[in-house]
Image (cartoon, rainbow over all chains, first blue to last red; front, side, top):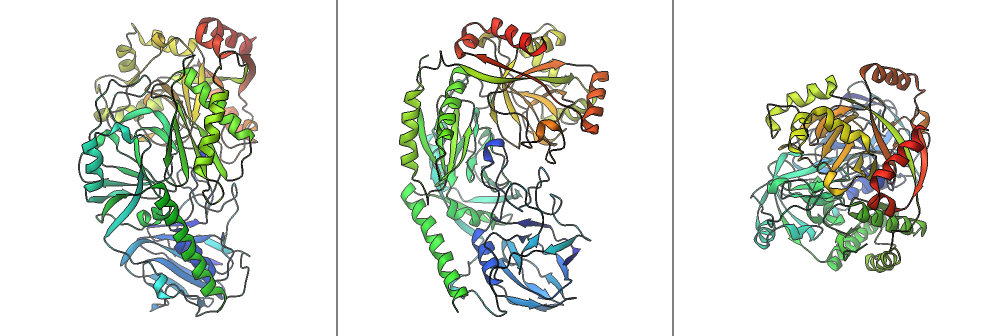
Length: 325
Length: 294
């Protein structure tokens, strides 16, 4: 059992997400940084789909009701047990009565706390992930609040030892500038040629509107090819007849401030989408903070698949190093 | 029916986006539904989601299992096989959907956001009636309730139906979305944006013009009501909705039924051909109402 003494800014229960309901308007949710989430579970011997806590910007204060094994991965939000710093990317033993707290975020935006056995909340449509907009999954469908009591589940699948760590070469490095790879397309024909170039050349800044639904960027105004709007689209030149939004797709309502949609995104709507963040870089978006900068870099389909394989290889290597030592 | 060339594109490494047409019509939506239905019947391993939209559709797949170009080549074959829809027999669920127009809750919400509206000095309903050339609000409401709507797409948030009225193009109502979206819309608000009516499943942001509110939910995450036993969302693509104007007494009566867990939608079924809807919409509309309320 884990008692929530302070909830942090936005701490939710997440796993790999809820796949197969996009067509009814239900986004997958799930951990925004799948690498950090997966590795966290591996460190404590969990099933790779076990539920963890996703911690955003400001960590919670948690009191453990039993002896267990934990790991903190992802963003650099320095964890402490009873006020003493503990290592990250490493399995750490905690005792009943220990209090886990966090320092100020130094890099990245989202850290993951995995607990041996996983967080035990009911499965909803095949996942324990929290989708706060509709109150589905997680702990009562919402971010944690002070006084919540989390049960520890039975999702440990192998013995794990304290001190097992992820070699540092696999730790991500967080920067205040990110290059985000995208595949241009979808409705990018709506942008003028010049604005397509501008989109890729601009150094975009993350605005305060950056959450699990999507990230909004400010930079330069983009322009759409003038046309008489097709029937049903709506009057703004950024409008199209309402269509589906891929996860990672980028839309530019009214040509102002592109929005990249993420795990809790709306699944469709009436804005022209112009590009899609490749799956291997979605985590990078989710690790950006307000006021950090980004550039969108165009890649081909082959490059996006290569990046995907690269990411899978990275996880497989870490898995090998953790499990066979 | 003349057919536009479909445009196939990649949405990153996990999505395929297919634009059938840039403008909305029932014909194009029937085509999107037919293609996605045929793809669904294949139960293709590696295809995670099949999302029909209004004039397009989208597929989510796992590129580790199936190749995008393999899917696209199959989609092209399916599209060619559904080239003539006019004689295809469709079967739809028809649903009576009560709406309380000009209710206090959406009124309060729309008044809070007048600064984001095209016409801050009137209500959304008055503005939309005027720009669509109606003499009165009553005539405008009548136009919305006399002919049924085709549920052409589900999404945005769980269960939100895009509803496209089954009337000739010249009678279709079109309204702009808010200049800037609202940050608040009441749950079950009945709105209109572009050529589409919708009901908002949950409280949240929104940019559609607000005309009223539905007493019955279209989303029930706890699946408490009988209509939601199989799915937490009620609308399905291909449903036919008839929005029926109700008064406050009926609104309150339905709300009580919802709270007691006894409410069920009044539904029926209908078979028809796209041809009937497109070429004889008036007769089709009467057939729907006859079937629903006989």
